[in-house]
Length: 155
Image (cartoon, rainbow, N blue to C red):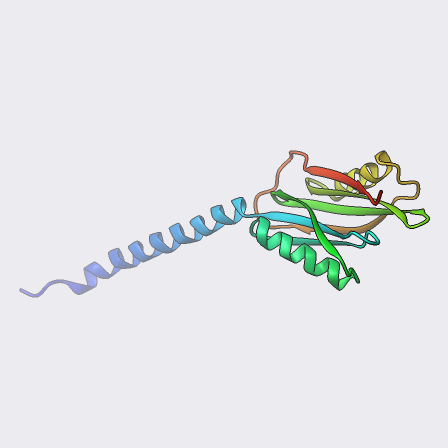
């Protein structure tokens, strides 16, 4: 008696479908934990750049590259945050070569990120804080938690 090959095919197909679904789910879960964004600035004139990556190293490298593509000659990593969401940066030229910048990463809405970046710039003495970049890191799961924000001055 020969084995019934036709009867075993649907079982094999179901196993492959389950395996493919598991791989897809694992990739999605990993993507949620790998979201990261970073900001960089030029220590001479405050030129800003941002980067989105899978971790600190890739987002940092992307931020420095973006900063240099914006004209920075002395780009330096500023800060990063793990998690998806909206980010923004603001800049104030305070005259006489002094500047203030504010940054926000991983906020749940564009409006919150913009507001927080400008507030950080103003809280550290910026007098005419203007938004430079607004961006969205879409890797990972949305969150209602607030992100992280920082400010920096040239002096």
